[in-house]
Every structure is written in structure tokens, then in C-alpha cells.
Image (cartoon, rainbow, N blue to C red):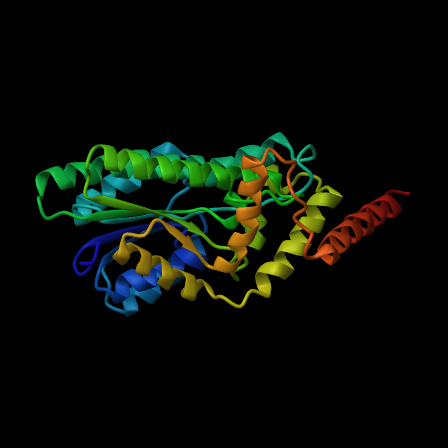
Amino acid sequence: MKDFKGRTAVVTGGGSGFGREFAHLAAGLEMNVVIADVQQDALDAVAAELEAKHAKVVARRVDVSKSEEVEALAAETESVFGATHLLFNNAGVGSGGLIWENTIRDWEWVLGVNVWGVIHGLRAFVPRMLASAKADSGYAGHVVNTASMAGLLNAPNMGIYNVSKHAVVSMTETLFQDLALVEAPIGSSVACPYFVPTGISQSQRNAPADVSGEPVSASKRAQQMMSAKAVGSGKVTAADFAAAVFDAIREDRFYVFSHPHALGNVETRMKDIVGMRNPSDPFAARPDVRTRLRAAMAGIAAQVAGGNA
């Protein structure tokens, strides 16, 4: 897809991070922009920024884990702007901790947003995009699903997030094959950022009350601290990565990485699988990270125990 002017982009998670940058880039290309987010104040702020650029904008509060809300967004987009050309299934949340310590509600929340949010986006928008292609021989579209390097690797203490992002990679690779099977004029890309400063490490701010109100395990709290530090120190910005994603759309390129040098870790994992070896130590090159993580977990557990004494 190379022609953007006058076409329509839909961005979930459009109130911050990559979503905000996708929306701004789309507006800069004179596209109509539909943004959705669960955080109303952030959504309103981005909508005002885009309108100041004279973009045509629809902004709606949407919980992507709810199919009816995503379906309503697709119907409204079609009613207001007609065809959708760019779909960014970008909404996502993060959570960590030892995999056996994550609660049922942790799993339901993270998978609801990160996995079901993408499923609902595909089911609501792709049939409409295919119908637009059938009605217009000049139609071109593209779907971008935001995954993560965590969708290609399996670091410890991040199981719930790893699982969700592996699912997004698998869904998007299958989408690519399915679109090719029916010869649709719709491209697809999977975005796999690594440590890029966004609001993902503060996901709990938008967690449902029955998730945010639960006791937080030492492992989960330690992962929040470690992730916030790693993400906050990232040198590649959300704007940098969003620009790389738009380059991939223009070039019809599937995999998009913020830190290509990290692919060495992916290669090691693939060699483990093909060679039928046990999974390699993810901290082999940085044993200090394992030491810090263990110390953080132990320190938090000691604080909690002391507070309960």
C-alpha cells in the first residue's frame, strides 16, 4: 500500500504510545483517522492534537476485549468514512510475575486485551475490507498487529505477556497466509518492538478494579520495576518505531523490529528447537540482569513479610 491520502486508518490503543504515533503519521499523510482507547482523557487529548492538524477524526472509547464494542467501531467507521484501508490492532497491556502466581483475572485481562482484542479487530474489520476490495478494483489495504519481541522469545517472569504476544505473532502469520490464499489486495505486518518507551509498563492504570485491587505478588512487582526501567531507558522512540511500521506498509514487508540486533536471541531459540536442545539461558550474555531480578523479588518478598509480622 503506497497511496494514503483520503483513505482511512483505524487505530486501537490510539491514546498513547505507538497508537498515538500511528494516528499522527496517518493524519500527516492526510488520512481520515479513527482512534479508539479505553482511557478517555488520553483519547480526547490525541483527538484534539489531530484536529489541530485539520485531520478528520473519529475518537471513541472502546474496550477491545468486548466484541460488541469493536463491532460498533467498525460499523461507525464504515458509516462515517466508508472503507477502512489501514487497520492497526495495537491496544495492549503488560503484566508479569511467575507463571503459576498469575491469577485467573490476570490471565483474563491480559489475554482479553492482547489476544481477544486482535481477534475482535480482525473479525470486525477484515470482512469489511474484503467487501471494499470486491466493490473497488483499485482498493488496497493493510493490517498491522502489534506483538512484541516477547512474541518470539520466552523470558522468565513474563509468562502471561509472552503467551499473549506469541498468539499475536501466530495470528498475524496465519492472516498473511489466509489473505494470500484468497488473493486479497490486503497486506499484513506484525510489529515486534523490544524496549521502547511507551505506557506499557504502566498498564495497571487501566486495569479493571477486580484486577488492580488484587494483592500483588513479589515476582509481579519485581517485573513491573524491571520492565519500567528497561522500557524507560530505551533509545528507540515510539515515533521512530511507528515510522518504521509505515515504511513496512509501503514496502509490503511483514516483520517489523525496533531492535534487529536482538534477533540473535530469536536465532538461538530456533536452533534450540531444531536441535531438540533444552531452552538456552536468556541471561547468558547478561547474568547481572538475572541477579537483579532475583534480588528484587527477594527484597519485595522480605518487605511484604516484614509488613505482615
